Length: 386
Picture 1 (cartoon, helix red, strand yellow):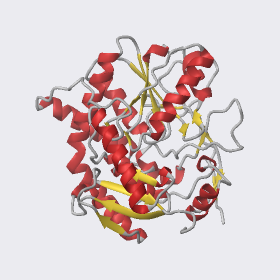
Picture 2 (cartoon, rainbow, N blue to C red):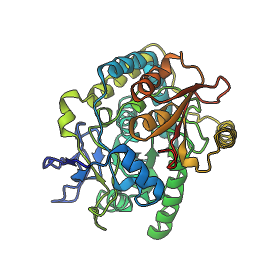
Picture 3 (cartoon, rainbow, N blue to C red):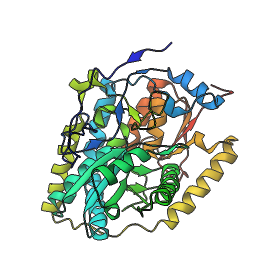
Picture 4 (cartoon, rainbow, N blue to C red):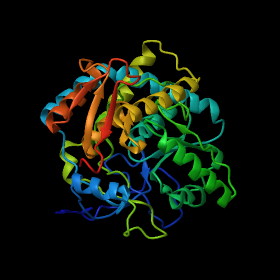
């Protein structure tokens, strides 16, 4: 069974960007227009139940980007766990945002245009924009666009940024929240290399993130720590779904999305931005000095390769897409895929309390591995078991 979700005739909202006369192309979701310009096309879509979606993906009949499963509001207990997690890790995220902003400000001497990868990169992009402007006095534009594994980046959106909004190619910085195995970072590198060759431009193909577990991008850290925005869904991302690429999207369209209008009373997107801006100000008032030096990525690359080899051997997994390392990736599996098991280094660690809660709610087996290089790893259930 499928259920129909619509955009409820979502209005197009112009953000704080320079559009050609008479052209309204982006909307800001539930964020303020000056926070972000989503270059996504709100569309209606028939929801596909999670188990059916998994079967279609693994059988090769449909690509995951063609479908969307129903997204539920977090339970009262999960929200309680989230607020506890935020209280624990807010200051660490604030310092990471300051460091990442310092890295970007040091590398970009001209204009800065953040291009966050919807949707996990969007909250980070919004707060980075404010940090670059408030702390580093650097005027910053922010767009959020789609990138899809095995389908590439939305080249129509990139052309719009460069040709219609006249942004300097040298100023573009591609932003995400974190990396897991590095799949999206590699997808970005390949897609931008192709775009550069086709368009005759030179875009920086690197991915900038708060933490880079795979050693494939630019980040102030490679630690698997809890980024609070990573454990929530639409209500932390401007009420926008992950991006959609199906037969409703024409050659001149941006990739699609669903706007979750019914979730508006429970939305935390703007609140989260202001909470982190306050935390950033508190860190600076306490004397924190941002570090404009990315972490050396070689250790993370080695650690990631060893982990993947070990998990494949231990569990007989041939498809690496079934392995999702790190707190952020593990959470997304429990929220919107069919998990086979959850592996935790320490189930009593407060930073993984939300994963324990989700595993309990969804009756997912939880295994403890004190030698794991990551705080959490989720495994997706194979088709033969699903």
